[in-house]
Image: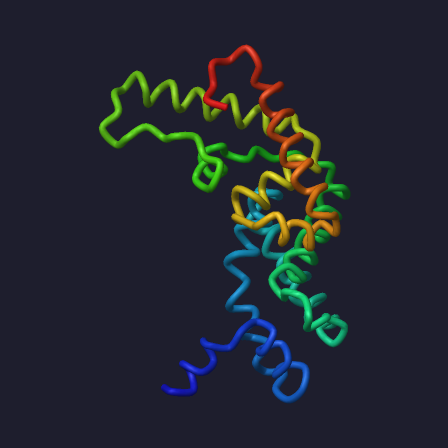
Length: 196
C-alpha cells in the first residue's frame, strides 16, 4: 500500500527516469496518467472513437520508442501532447476531415461565456442551444491551426507556455494565434448577437 502512495507522488519526469533506467514495466503508469487526457484531446479534434483509439496507441508507442531522447529538463506532459498533436495533424491531413467542436466545452474554461443558470427559462435555453449550433458551424469553418489552438487552450486547459512547447512555437506566437482564432471565430459569427 505504501508503494502505491510512492508511485502516485512521483512526478512525470521522475517516473520517466525510472522507466528509462531500471523498470520498463512502469511505462504502464505513464499510459494510465495520460490515456484519458490524450483521448479527450484527440477525440475533440478527430471525432471518431475508433480512430482516436488507434491514434492513441500510436502515440504511446512513439513516446515509448523515443523516451530515451526525451529531454528531462522539459515538461513531459508537453512532450507527449506534442506527439499526440503531430499524430492528429497527420491523421487530419490524410483524411482531410473537419470536425465540429462544441462551444459548450470551450466555454467551460478560462475565457468562458457566462452560462445561464439551471433555472433559466425555456426561451433562454433555446437561444443558448441555437447559439451553440451557430458556434459549431463557425468552428467547423475555421482553419485547422485555429481549431487546434482553441482545443488546446479551452478543451485541454493548457497554458500559453505548454501550448508553445506542444506546437513548437514561441509563447508570443501562441498568444497571437489565440487572439486571431477568437477574432476569426467572431467574424464567422458576425451578424449574430453572441456573447463574445
